[in-house]
Image 1 (cartoon, one colour):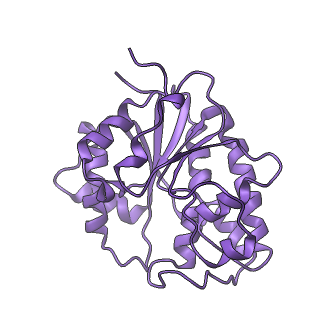
Image 2: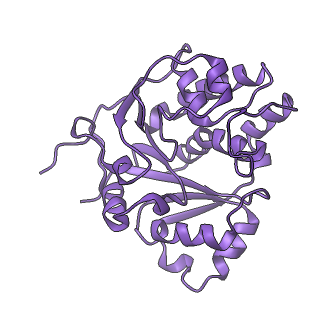
Image 3: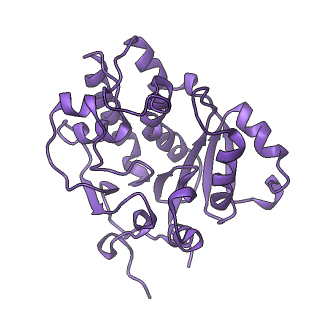
Amino acid sequence: MPGNVLYVSVLVYNPSDPNTIEMRLGWFRPLLESRIPLVLFIDARYQEALEAVEWFSEGIHPDVRMIPWQLDDSETWRLCREYSPLQLPESRNGAKDTEFFMTLMNAKTELVAAAAGLEMEWPFVAFLDAGIAKIFKDVEGSFRRLRDLEIRRGFSGMLLPGCWEPAGVRMDVLAGKICWMFCGGFFVIPRGEVMGVEKVALTALREFLERGRLTWEVNVWVWMRELPGAPVIRWFSADHNDRMTIVPSEYRAAEL
């Protein structure tokens, strides 16, 4: 049966990305072909590359709405530039975890908020990494679960899979190394609560920036839990694989 979740993803060229555009489009293809309702924020370079591949045609992908977007148009980018230069975490993948990459990761809640403002019917909005297929073993089954996901009526808060049990973590620790309390590739928010989540996420990010630090969005969300106006976090145990898509029954609508 059809679900009640609209998905949001992003494809933006990162000059320090060790993976090619062609490789990332290959990872994106299974998501595109899964018929998941999707709002895709995409820059000109990726859109040109996507429209050039033989397996893509807007006419045969009616479930996808593409919106031109680039990172330096975002509030997240503007906020990070306001405090630049910024110190990045000491323990990170230097080739991948650049200032551009971390700024883009922190823009996820802003993108979800932008999609929630569109004239669409879905009561829930979710972020989904464009290349998430690369971590699935059962690609078809995982995307089928996401496509059919129906969150129960009355759900409130931010639904997040995570590897580590939720706990308090000091800001200096969050600024210095990755914390996998949350998996950043997938989360769900009621459409009516998205703007509030974006606001408090930017407030949490600003608290790092005011100290001259920039860190991963999953670490910012750990800190966000402690702030006024933070959403109730509905955490469930997962890993960076198909388990991210197995939403516990307590959060889903009753199945017939």
